[in-house]
Structure formats: C-alpha cells, structure tokens
Amino acid sequence: MSRSYTVRTYGCQMNVHDTERMAGLLEEAGYARAEDPDTADVVVFNTCAVRENADNKLYGNLGHLRPRKQANPDMQIAVGGCLAQKDRDTITRKAPWVDVVFGTHNVHALPTLLERARHNENAQVEIAEALEVFPSTLPARRESAYAGWVSISVGCNNTCTFCIVPSLRGKERDRRPGDVLAEVEALAADGVSEVTLLGQNVNAYGSDFSEGAGDRSAFSKLLRACGDVPGLERVRFTSPHPRDFTSDVIAAMAETPNVCPQLHMPLQSGSDDVLRRMRRSYRSERFLRILADVRASIPHAAISTDIIVGFPGETEQDFQATLEVVRQARFAQAFTFQYSSRPGTPAAEMDGQLPKHVVQERYERLVALQEEISWAENRAQEGREVELLVSTGEGRKDDATRRLTGRARDGRLVHFAPGETSGIRPGDLVTVVVDRGAPHHLIADGGVLTHRRTRAGDMAEAGERPSGAPTTLGLPAFGQPAAQPEPVSPCAVPVTSGGAR
Image 1 (cartoon, rainbow, N blue to C red):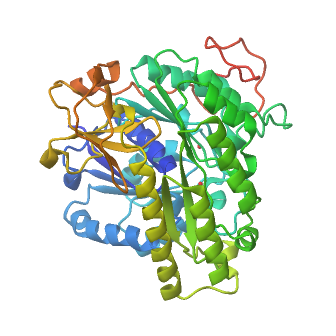
Image 2 (spheres, rainbow, N blue to C red):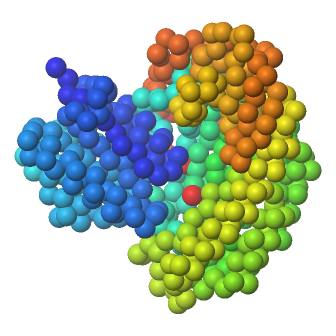
C-alpha cells in the first residue's frame, strides 16, 4: 500500500501555490493523499515566518504530533517554507522527532529527502541559498477545479524595514512570459475559469528581462496576453507595489475584458514619516492618486489593502494620518495587522517600539472605521446585478441558510439563494441581484437570473482537477532567454517563449 500524506499550509498565497506543488511531487513519487489527515503517514508543514507567533504555532503543532511519532516510528514529519528557511537547524534541535527540514528554494527535494531520512534513519536538513527549480515547473495537485494560482515571479527586490520575506524568498526572479502563458493556457484547456497571477511584487515583473535592462511594461503586456487565452473567464493578480504601479497597468485592466475590476494595493501606513521609516518609496498623496486613476478608468473597481498599526515610532498624529487616508480611500476591504517585530529586520532594532496596549487600542479604532466603510461600500452594491463564479468552502452557514456562495468579478463574496434553479455546481457562473450589503459580504435572496454550466462545473461535479502537469522541465533560465520559435499563443510580451508580499 502507498504511504499517505497531508500538507498543513500557513501564510500567503505563495505558500498555497507551493503546497500544490508539494502535493504533486508526493503523488508523483507514489504517495496518496490521506483521507483522514490525522492518520497520515507523512505530515508536511508549509510554514510562514511573517507573524510573530509563527514559531510558537509551529512548535506547538509539532509537540502535538510527538506522541504519534513515538507510537509509530515509521511516521515522518517534514517542515518546509519560510520558517524552515529562517530557523534551519533550530527546528531539529527544538523538535528532534522531525525527519526533514527544507527551505523555500528547494521544494522539489521533498520526496528525495523523505526517502533519504527513512533510509539513513536520521533527520535530513537541506536549505538551499538560491532558487534551484522554479516551483511552477513542478507537478501540482490543484485544489480547485475552477480557479488556479499561476506564479509569475518569486522573491522580492524591495527593502521594506518590517519585512523578512526578501531574506527568505531571495531576490526577484521572473518567469519567461511564454512559460507563464503556457501554464495559463493549460489551465484554461483543462476547464479552469479563473487564474490569479502571483508574485511578491507582480508589477515589477520584467525587471530582469532584455539582458538586464528590464521591461517596465511587461506586466501590462502579460495581462493583455491573458485576455487572448480561449475559455479563460477571469484574471486576477496579487500583490502590486504602489512604487511600480503605472498607467499602462490601469489601461490593461480597463481594456482587457477578463481582467477583473479588483485591486489589492498595500498602503501599510498613511503617515509619510512612517512610510519613510518603513522604506516604502511612495507617500500618501501618490497612493491616493493611484486609487483615483484606477477609479477614473474602472469606476466599479473594488480596492483592498494591507495596513500595519503600531510601527516603531508611530505617534498618534501618524496614526490619525492613516485613518484619514482610509477615509479618503474608501477601501472595500482592509487586512489590518498589529506590528510584529521580526528578528533580522531593520525595524526590529528601531527605537520607539510601542507598548502592546497602545497598538491594540489603535488597531481597534482602525478596524471599527474600516468596518463602517466596508459596510457602506457593500450597501452601495444593493440593487446591482452581478455575475458570480460559484465557489465551495467559502460560505460557512450555507447549509443552515440554504444558500450557495460565489465571488463577484470585483472579488466580493456573495451568498445567494438558488431559488427554483437546480443543478448549480462550484465553477458554474450565475447572475443575481444584490439585496443586502453586510460588512464582509453581500446577500442575494431573489433567486438566480441566469445559470451557465461550465467545464469547471463538470470537473467539480466529477471530483476531477486540472492535470497539474509542469509547463517546462528541469531548471529554467531566468531573464532574457535565447531566441526560440514564437509561442503558439498570441502574446504581446516582447520576449520569446521559453521551454510569485
């Protein structure tokens, strides 16, 4: 019998993407996904290191597994991701029952390390210092029949003083546009309706093209090229950086029908002094101007953001500046965080670390303001007809309320009553009229106006997933590739085709 596995994922969309690759690698190596995760022969932790309690969460979970490991020595535990890249040998010192530790740059080595740990009967710790194989070239076990992640770059060239990601993910490396489009086309051919382009800073994409000179318009060209992919209904992307966000990207969003009217634009702080200490290369006026330009071209765009409260040295005046930008920005949604000191970042050494109670009180004020704005923005959607991509697992109360759930093109979550319409599957497309706006979602109880069955819905109903086949083999080159035949797909990106906060 094949050994079973489960992967526990923490953190950002990049980690979700990496988890799909880990699962694909394990299944290609003969492992089977555990029907009951609590009885899996192999447990993989794909970790995050962004938040302060990430370490405690990992070691707490490892501690819970220790009795199982003692009772079953053949069970294996592996730890990967950003915290593994950061802590390295610390993990096996604190939790010597862990079998494998691997980093963000060598996901591909997971099956080999597990086998080596079994054969040698000792822990295998392998942390690569640079990317060895682009994750998107690896097999994948896609979790969704209707939506797929597509990484366009890995790493980050920014130097934000609060962020540990660049030291764990490395410098930005961009995939060839032809490879990105090949993966998008493969997903669409398999029936996937929606793709999300991933990168730590997606709109810096192309910075190492053209023999190092870069192509500042590469991302907008990639968006337009995705518009030519047959069968692809929706394109999203995350996350851009205000510094690199340019008018050509706004134009591509507005003029490419399948690019969704949704934008996640991290603010972090509304205080120019705090932004300077964060080493964010824009100021609040520039940020608000970007939002105004987006809304001028895409009036119904839903804009979300990230905000950090309590950065070292933040004064009440600084915080009031953040509240003012939030009032002006009218975000549909904001992901708000209390500043978390991360060893190894410049901010951790700054003077003016704020007491917990001060940060908590400011955080609560910010959340209250944003909830008020989100609710008002959602009430403004009442009476609108919206198209929904029906989803699964996003409506926790759907069974009790007899509703289904879907995402509007602008990303808003909508719980809807199917009414007399039967046979609606995840992945299908429906149109409804919004009856009521709540702070975090919309309600549509008037029944379904139209229902379009899709190939994604067929696959979801049959329990099938996209093939997950890699789009290239081996170690891809980065930057300007050698001249090769033009890609089959119509691609506006000016480099030839080759072989993601």
